[in-house]
Image 1 (cartoon, rainbow, N blue to C red):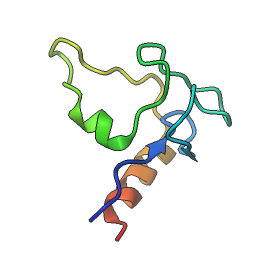
Image 2: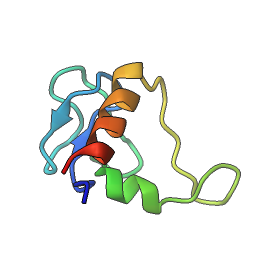
Image 3: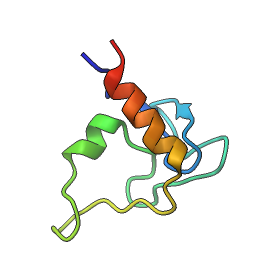
Image 4: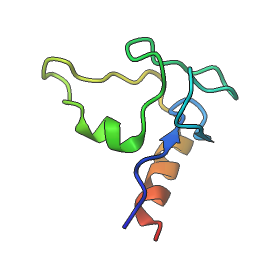
Amino acid sequence: MPNLNIVICPGCGSEISVVNHGCPKCGYENNEDGRLLTLAEMLERPSYPDPGAMRLNDVCPAFIKAVVAATQAD
């Protein structure tokens, strides 16, 4: 079963601490929640155009690669 209770920065693709105030490596922030969310938390959010949809700015390819790798982990 994949571990989706990890935080991967959408800005640089680095795995960072679940307890965070944004990415310490590239400075990516989530001003709505005050921290970057785990993959599991992101999956629980509604999608645009639904109310309360999460918006990620400037998502890098490394983020998508890391998410795919996380879903394939044992």
